[in-house]
Every structure is written in structure tokens, then in C-alpha cells.
Image (cartoon, rainbow, N blue to C red; front, side, top):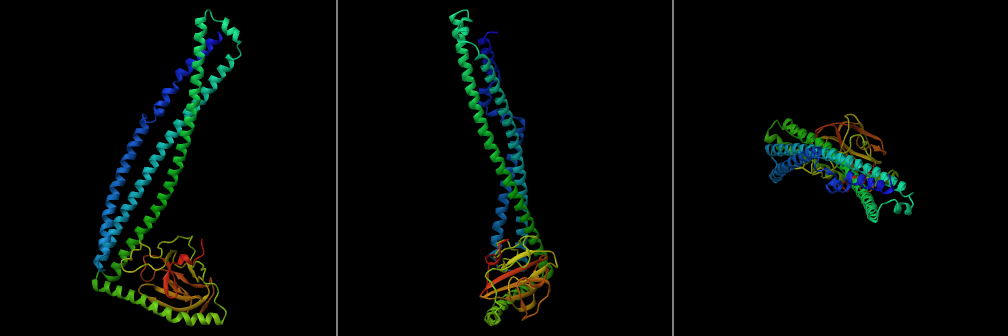
Length: 400
């Protein structure tokens, strides 16, 4: 076979492969039955999420209206029930979003597979074209000239040679486009995976919030026996307890700080140690947490650290125990006064292991985690006060 016959075969080979039309249709991905099915599922999930978000907004409005009303037993129960319903919808919306991301990941992985296969076909095609050209390039120009029966055949062969070169360039260009498309899709896949991790983390928080709200509702029912008078009595006792603590701290702070200074036992209270290891179960409620179940009744003035009942509670810094008490709000609790106007409170303890006026060093045992007082489960409620005023404990605690 003469050299130009080979070149014609190469040209036909490129044309048969249909590289141009293949890419002009967007890899034919949109016409794939699997992709169409996944696209339909994606649309359904997005529609479901939109509907859930509208329901969530409706519950938000109800909650805001209830919070604006004066606290009553049935009003508080209604408020908690609306919060529970909203949180259940939050969970459903998050689960649906997780399903959506999983479907989108499947669709992306299918597209990536098709792009990879296309890129591999292009690579093989380019290699074959180059191999054919290398074979033909061994021919001598004069042989090519005299190997044709006429000038017309010669120029026809030259034209076909130019077509082969153009098709090869197109193939190389399309390979570059395919590579860029693949890199973009891989980047999108990584983003989807990160989004999935965030959604799963949010789901865990929503489940914890649902447990807190359900526990708060059950607690109020048990504590008041669904009596408005008992509810108002509980509310009064809780507020009186908060007032008492505020007054006593201011009264004792100067005296105890003087004692710490005289005995050179003040230590550094600007940085506090964690009274319970936060890596055990994290933080279930933050300072002035908007999701706190009883926020309608009073602000959450510390951190809640969930832990198994009986987990040891340690002093956050050197100081003196101002008092140990049992109250309606805090249950069994301990107040420790440190240097520089700082004091710490440890509440809902199952037991207390210190006594009033006792010196404690950083890390000394204060008591054990429990669920006494206004509590929906075993945890330590930890407060930090500066000159008697509650402040965010995270501003003082060592980073973990």
C-alpha cells in the first residue's frame, strides 16, 4: 500500500471515531438514561427541601409569637412543642439534604467515569494517529510524488494529508477540554463530600437539640404536675436563686480575694482549666445559647458539658469555696472564688466533695456530674463570673 493510502486510512480512522460530534453533544451525558433518572431524583429532593423550609419558617413565626407572651405553664409547653416540631422538621430537612448530596455525588461520579473513559479513548486515538504518521514519514518526498499516476492524484493525497493534520489538532484540543472538564468535576465532588460531612454534623446537633427540648417539656410536666400555680412557684424560686447568687458573690469576692493574696495562693485566674473534659461529649449549650430550651424563662449563663453521671468535676483554678448549696435551678452546686474578680460555678452535681471556706487548687476534685435541679440529663453546668457578672466561659478556658 502506498504512503497516501495509509494516510487516507488514518483520516478515515479519525472520522469514524467521530471526535468532533462526540464532544459537541456534551459527552452525550445529558442523554444518558441514568443521568436523567438521577436528575429527576435531584429535582424531587430539592422540591421536598423547599416545602420543609416553608414549614420550618411557619414554626419560627409561632415560636417568636409565643416568646413575646408572658411565661405560663401551658404557654411554655406550647412553646416547647413548637420547638420540638420545628427541630423534627430541621432533622427531616437535613436528612433530605443528605440524600440530595448523595444523589448529586452519584451523578457526578457517573459523569467523571464517562469523562475519564473519553479521555482514555482520545489518548489512544492520538497515539494511533501519531504512530501512523511516523510510519508514513519514512517515505521520501520524491517517492510520494512519482508514486501517483497523475498530478490530480498527488494533490488529492496532499489534501488528505492536511485533513489528517487538522483532525489530529482537533483531537488534541478536545483532549485538553476533556482534562479541564474532569478536573472541574473532581473539584465539585470534593466540595460535595465536604458539604455532606457538614450536614451529618448538623444532623447530630439537631438530634441533641430535639432530646434537650423533649426533656425540658417532660421536666416541666413532672415538676409542676401541669399546675399553673406550681409553674409560677418554680419560676419564682429560680429567679430568687439567681438573685441570691449575684448578691453573695459581690459580698464575698473582696474578702476571699484578700485571703488568697495574704496567703500568696491567688494563682492565675485569667486562664481556666476545663472542669470536665470537653472532648468526651462536646458542649450541649453555650453562653446565652439561642437554642437553650428554657431561654424564654431565663438566659443560659454558662456552658453545659454532657458527661456520664459520676464523672469527676475539677476546679478550674486555685481559689476558695464560697458556698455549697442545693437549689431549684442549679440543684447541687458549688461556687469557687478566685483572684482578679473571677469566680466559677459548678451545677447539677450528683454529689459535692468540698465544703464552704475550703481552699482548692487547680485540678482538685469539686464533685461529680449529675442531673439535679432544672436539668434534662447528666451534665455539668459551668459558669464564669467577672466581678459577679456572668461572662462567656470560652473567653477564659484553655483551648482544646
